Length: 201
Image (cartoon, rainbow, N blue to C red; front, side, top):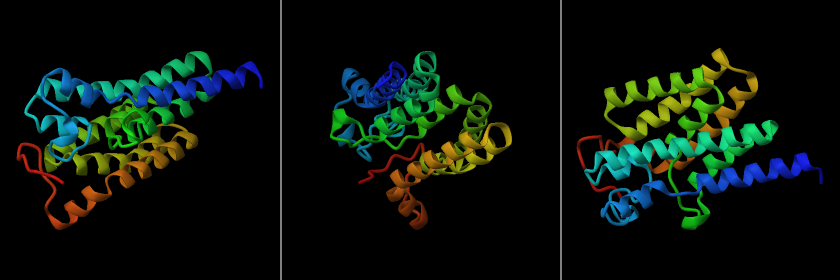
């Protein structure tokens, strides 16, 4: 095994471990909010942290969940550039399936956005703008995340490479898979909206 391949494996593994850090759970416990997995939807992401009523902790969770995927990509780019997309994807998957929480993690929207900003910033900015607009219009975090993820391959096709377009499509499919329960609630009209707390099990 060459040094190059060892470096590539190392940064991909590091990416997964970075992605597996459950910032929502750690920050909520540190702030005295309890175990976020026992609140609302039970998810470890920023939307569920927001259900505690602590907006600064929810914002910090959003930024850190995005930042860990971006960091994984940028670290890999400095060490083994050809493995950077895989390291970023590993961080994304680490958030979805974290080893530290028995592979029960978040839904990947913030990590997806952070990775996009690091990998192809014009695509990342378009994703962020679409997410914010959709969130403001529908007041539904899950729907905003799903629709912005679905739009991202189009953004990548217009402003990035075919490889990044395919990459975005694959990650968007993973986001849809993790939101399967939310999709059901959206379709039957029971999905909670931002600003209207509702128990979600």
